[in-house]
Length: 312
Ligand SMILES: Nc1ncnc2c1ncn2[C@@H]1O[C@H](COP(=O)(O)OP(=O)(O)OP(=O)(O)O)[C@@H](O)[C@H]1O
Image 1 (cartoon, rainbow, N blue to C red):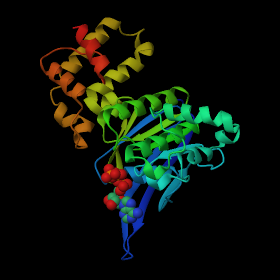
Image 2 (image 1 turned 45 degrees about the vertical axis):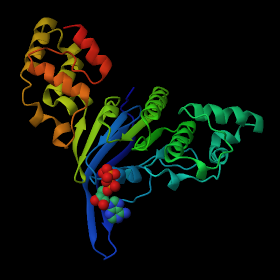
Image 3 (image 1 turned 90 degrees about the vertical axis):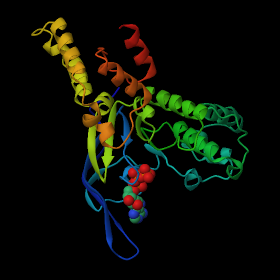
Image 4 (image 1 turned 180 degrees about the vertical axis):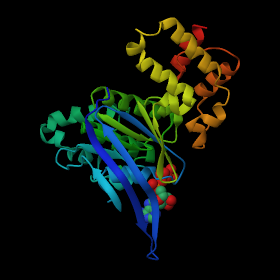
């Protein structure tokens, strides 16, 4: 569950890359972001909008040109672990076993205990490879999964994922989502950069990047459905405090009216404004709303869609 304890923060951060010509190239301006313990943040945005730059800043690999940053990048505790787009760039060991042996967790195990630990760590992401396999003999997707397995095994406070599923097949993508969900349930804070909007639905918060600045920071429902999604969420949140003043019945009918009025979705959705096509579930829900049906709550995934439809 998200808390208000701030783990990392950026204040008015800017990044200017120095080009070979000596010229400065500004890729970020005035980026402010607080990351709280227990959050699952999905970071989305078009190509070149500065998302990977965020990953490298949060991993302490990229200094700011302007602004302030507060990180959790202590090498000893491995408080923040990253899984970046290019797995090769991150390996230290020659074999899978050697890679996992770098983790502090491995130091506490005997050689025999390590055998079953390797299998457990790999199984968490759906892999059943021999730990003696050399990294060079793995496919790109397998390398990425080993990378993620090592990051999860380190039990970091913050897990930073930069498009980790980009080169994975659907079955492996599912394994990754499930493994990350379990890590989140164990208390790991997740920051997941992704182009796959169906992965966004797992998040508690969406941060949208557009041309080097944050253009959206809010809940997934508001990201997909625009104001009506935000209002729907807000009204749920304030339900308890307002219950004494307004009857639940009138509140529900008011919300239904708001959802029915949601005709200009294409214009007002932050998801569409960032240049993305909403996922199938959201498009289906919008189609039903346009037919005059009331969906409450606005669905974010197939299970929620099936449930609201069964209640119609
Ligand atoms: N080391 C660098 N030197 C100069 N420019 C860079 C450097 N790294 C990134 N950039 C530029 O900064 C901008 C943002 O890059 P970044 O990789 O952060 O974007 P992104 O949103 O992750 O893109 P993508 O979705 O394509 O991965 C791009 O225009 C890119 O060309």
